[in-house]
Figure 1 (cartoon, rainbow, N blue to C red):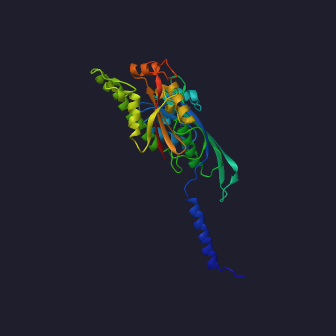
Figure 2 (tube, helix red, strand yellow):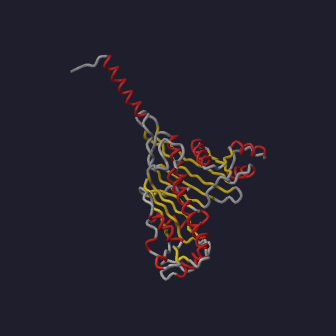
Figure 3 (spheres, rainbow, N blue to C red):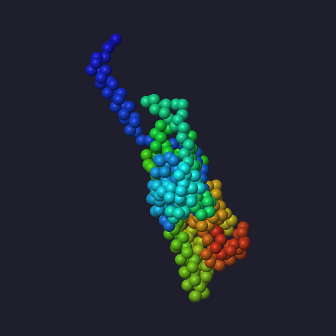
Length: 351
């Protein structure tokens, strides 16, 4: 039997130590999270908000996310100062925070509650592993109504507490803002391991495409058709056989979409004239129902399978749009009014 000398033993120990250190430096493991969330109104760059919570990592992630969205964030120290000046010397309640936030000129308070517990299991180094869940809700300081909310729960234990909280915060936010679907999933391209905030390049691209498509469609419907009408040229579904006919606005957008190779751009509706314009998936249908119920949302973006998707509310911006849908023989809905959501412009592209 061969016996290791002290030199060989020392070498082996150094090798083991290097292996262990290398494992410590490996990229963070994506969490499998279970989420839920929704919104009525999302903040814009005119919104002033305050983030309030006891978990510093969650508060940090929330602040970073809002600041990247150009939302003005008031430091919580200002809220505490206003409360003290108002004679409040106990631990601030939610009502105290809302009152102080209003005095500070904020429109929303984003509360984040974290529930963290150490599990009974330990890692290789004897360090504890954790379970955690997060609840985020944004309240209007005047009405107390919830503008948006998101929840996330880890479905397995994790070792790095700060990283775990950042990922959970990201998934709760992504679900609340419609950037990922509720339910159970591993980290998506929106919430990357090792990042303190979500990455939203793809949804931002979808919003850009949709905003551009809506602008061109609006110009066509309101200006080109109006100018053509002066020469007795009118939009006609069968425009190719009519010497005085031009495309309907919907036909114009779909024709433009057919010229694109890198992504899909088309129209969908809950009660379309043609069945080919029905939503392709349940997720698209649910997103469209949200837009119909809340047209002010404007645009929704989300991930589904291997695709990023975005929907923009397609409004009846002209009486001709209403007349066409209400009088068409295959239309399932004949009581549209100007300003109604008739469907959505949808963009789909692969990850």
